[in-house]
Length: 212
Image (cartoon, rainbow, N blue to C red):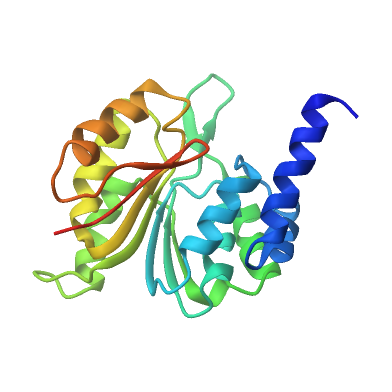
């Protein structure tokens, strides 16, 4: 066994030994997406006790299913325009990603608890207010961001949505460890704010708890 294979086996074994480890590994292997095994475990376990979850960036449903299975009583708003690349390199809607996400939600029995919004997150923000009492929109227990990874995209997501997280709630974002654009937007808005606790890490995920 190569050193890489051994490390991978040990990482999976550590997750499997933890709470609900066997189910997490099964879901991680079954679903299509770009999460490490530790990141899958983080989403599943962090969802526990969170009733209102918003996900920005769903791709084909891996993170959404993990969140929904982690907390059987949660309702999840999953927002993704499901863009792809057209024949001439232009950005176009990709129905295959939508189809595969909806299939994953159905296959794992969580579709009835997920509101799947096929829009850009900024365009979906007014919908949240409309759905949740206009001037006093519903607080979010867990905000998961894995959408547009440009600096501007992450900044817009955090500016639009992070203030909706309740005190004691969690904001988490993917690719903090991989992309300077994500890291800069996060550090400016979460890391430098006294509203949030210290930034913590799970592989490439950054997360923080709302303090006030």
